[in-house]
Length: 158
Image 1 (cartoon, rainbow, N blue to C red):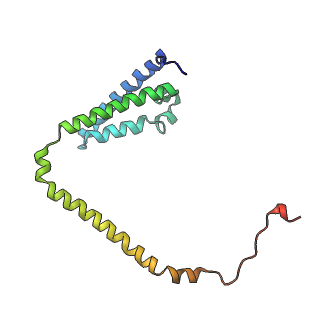
Image 2 (image 1 turned 90 degrees about the vertical axis):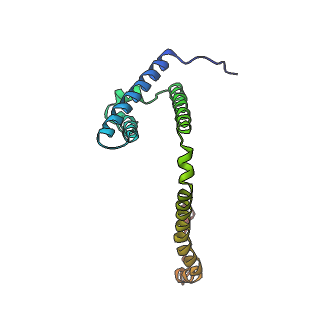
Image 3 (image 1 turned 60 degrees about the vertical axis):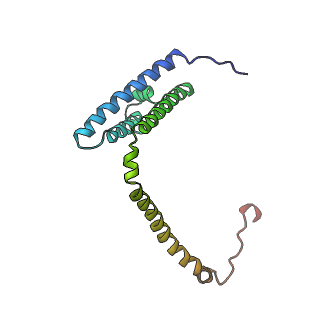
């Protein structure tokens, strides 16, 4: 049975650096996106892409070691902080939901969603039904007229 131990201080320092870099970069990129007429979330997503392991870590590996978790404990710590952030995001989203706005536009939203489902189903089921009806004809045209010779493995051809 493993005994619970606290995370090493080095891993906690890396976590604080990671969170600081992520928040500062997201804030800067969010402000830049707003100045370009885009929602702040676009800049924040771009900040995550820039700081991710595929871009920054490949260009500057030394800096990437401080941003991308290198040990299992660092990964767990960053995951816990991100999960807490997602919970707060959902909480704030729920608190800022305008129920009157939802009630006013419920009929339009439902009709658009059902229409999208019907169009998607209709455009997918039409071609599928024609293919399934012609499956017998298609199978006959693909079937070879002669049977190919069996292929023996090299080990059997002594």
